[in-house]
Amino acid sequence: MLGRRKRLDIWSHFKYNDTDKKSECVIITDGKHCRQRISGKNTTNLKRHLKANHPHIQIPDVVKQPARKEERPSMSGAFFSHIKYKPDSQEQRIKEEAIAKWVARTAHPPRTVEDEEFINMMEKIDKRLTVPKKTKITNLVDQMYLAEKVKFKNRLAMARKVTIGIDIWTKKGLTASFLAVSACYFNVQDSKAEHILLNLKQMVHPHTANSIITLVEECTEEWGIPKEKIIMIITDNGSNMVSAFRVEEEDTSSDENDSKDSDEEEEADERYGTLERTPCVVHTLQLVVNMVKKEQAIKRLLDKVRHLVRQFRKSSVATERLLEQCGLILIKDCETRWSSSFLMLSRLLEVKDHVISVADTMGWDCLLPSEWQKVAILKDLLLPFAEHTKVLESDTCCFSLVVPAILDLRSHLSDFSLAHARSYRDVATLAQKMSANMDLRFSCFLDVSASNFSPLAAAACFVDASVSAETLIDNDNDDIQNLLSKAEEYITRSVPYQEEVTDDEDIRNAEVSEVPLQKRPRFRFFSAHRPSSKPKTSKASIRQEVQKFKESLSHANPEESGMDFWSSQSSTMYPRLKPLALDLLAMPASEAFAERVFSLTGDLSSGRRNRARITLERSAFLKLNKV
Image (tube, rainbow, N blue to C red; front, top):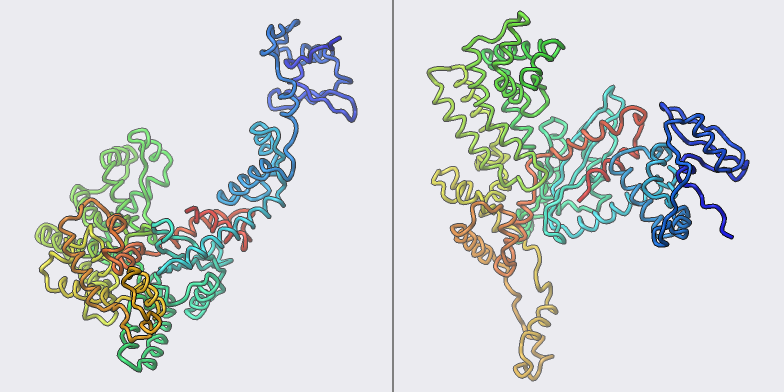
């Protein structure tokens, strides 16, 4: 005889405990658990409890049974749905790794997995899953961290050239400082540019040049990056950064001078890939924009604008009225934030009419019509700087745009000063001063006669098919032609990346394999010892590839990026130029990636995680390196 069927509509509100043989009510009413315990598991007693204490739950007296067999609940399914995965099963392991990856890359503390709400959520997702404890999650995150480091170390080992970016960050309260070291390179496996975080090393005060270079050397040694593979190091314009790598360059140059014993060695020392420091282009542009604050007439206008913005942001009434009218609020600028003054002026002009209306109702003094006009002109002056800053702070593939961006800004300042020379002389004078300051600060990229000139930016611009013709090749300006000559000279003196034949034995084997069997010499062992010349890797072949590239620019798609252009080219057509071009195009123009690390670490080290040191680097590494 079959027993009674279990009333699922009633038992869904109870949980039976085999230890004390009681049924506990799990209903939550107004945020409170009932938790009343009833002896045994008699369905009638449970129904009586529901009617007396939870009348809002409707329980039918008779439950209609499934008419057909296939409609009845599967006993095996109901049984197995409550059986947990085995601890060593693949299903349990996959889900544990997924939870560990979520904890690591969202920077949640491992104790999150022991939270009651998290456990309830995972039980609803998969009842068979046993939620791991925080100790196991910590171990899984450590294993993931080590595995990711090995993966990226292998990629760096295969990379031809690496660009290093560094920046320093100090926590609020000056309790700790960190040096972020990033690496940008062309991934030869996936044929794309990658930018990753290498280390987040804690520093001690003072941040001297010696401590900076020591930590950078420790990082490159840990990741197996030799100095000859580092094409450049990007830093800000701080005196400690400049001093750190100026010493490195002087020591390197003195060693090179001592080792120049022949013309061949002298040529090798000047080849592509020598270690050098490059200033962050975005930070340098910020210094040019900061000249706005030094012009007294413009400074008075900006101070008045800031005072108006400050009034709105401090008044909840004014802010609420502004939101009711346009749904926007005013933006306050920050001295250390890129393009913040431009954003403040743009938002002010965007809600100009609403600001005037609210200021009148509040009884505040607003800007005069002439001042509003000057604010609009000042916005037009800063607009190209904001646009180029947004492009040049990309993580990869923007170093080739440095030269055209600087030339474009220089032309903009020249046209701007001429257009407003009569109507707004103070703004025109400011544009002239900014142009002169740009020429001074970016002489390392444009002035071939400067002592600190580097042809690296010009070479990157030259191999970028999307800007090369317009910026360098078709430009008749003498300074630009000199820059083009330096770029071509830099490329022709570059090191061939990979030779198909590396020694005499390989050359002989290659020559023998290419000759048909019937045409091989009878005395092949004797013939193998005959004097033979190596395949020449002369500069002429590189110049031929350069010339071929210049001729192909007339047929290039102007909307195609430089990276896409070279990815579509055959390696047999450009055996030496293509690898060099891909490495130059992969480089960033700023160390913004290393600076963005601290936007993340500021959250990771706040609150109860204020003293995080080791886990901070691990969390930042796993969060950022999701390539």
